Length: 224
Length: 234
Image (cartoon, rainbow over the protein chains, first blue to last red):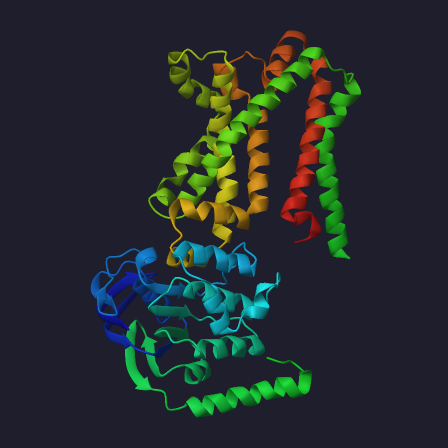
């Protein structure tokens, strides 16, 4: 569980004030461009320093820990391409964290990815999410992980994320994704968080997403 | 076809630039080489290589460290020597080199070469690291990879930049004259050889060597274009 309280960050010309945010399951952090979503999560992860407030993970205060020592895995907004083949990347980080990468591969159903060398954008994101899980994080923070992905790739990533059982902050500006994936939604505007509200639209989002996907399957033969 | 005409102008200017540099000298003087010239080239090759072996790892560490403060704030201290006449660099290094009894030694030349080539290698590597994006390093930090441990991973991501940095550093060292002239005229490096022979005999004995050096630099220039993908329109 992630708890952020009495939080104040000033960076990139914006001031973020969050009285309280509690993440138990999957929480969507929605908001317009420039509303402060990325600045906020970067401070929660420890990349930016907060001026005030605490970050607790499973009740343990991690506010003063550096990024690398927080039990939080973070996938930034930019496309990250590490210079490894897929299996090599998982093996490297598994060894670094003393874990076995096979459980991640099996859990996420990524067997087919390991032998590949050229990955699609969606596959690349899945590989990075799998890599992030090798840290054994207690919280996962994904900053617009489906940004710049085409629709089938987006669905592939979202379906995989639904299988994860780690408290997750899912940053997005797409309400459909948020409805499809998350249990709760919060909205950030001008550095302030509104919410949370329970996701009552999941069935509608599933239907919308699956119907759109069916269009791809029927009309252009794309299988996801 | 305005674009094609523009390209013609570009080609004419480039060839004109090169012609000004080479044609009058080649037409006027014989392309002769002396044994001393070859010896000076060999000295310079060896010393430039030693200098690059020092410069490259140093440039990598500094470039990686300069992506964040305090390294980022201090980066101009590394690049400043580019804008200072290299004779001034030689004068500034003189107390150290003279004090250590290194005047006219290979060590003095390597020190001068390293000081002047470091900013070149550093800048090439730093630009390549910056182009990886902040997310690259933030992801690695989140995965527990920080400081020294980032370097082997980043090297793999910017392989061609590392090669280019090495080539540029090596050539910067190879072509150094100003600082070397102040600190060590012996063993004779190629810049000092050309300078001294020109003073003693005029241009005739050194035009051939100078043209050969230019031809080598052109070949490397094309190699770098290939490596960076510019020549292929990337």
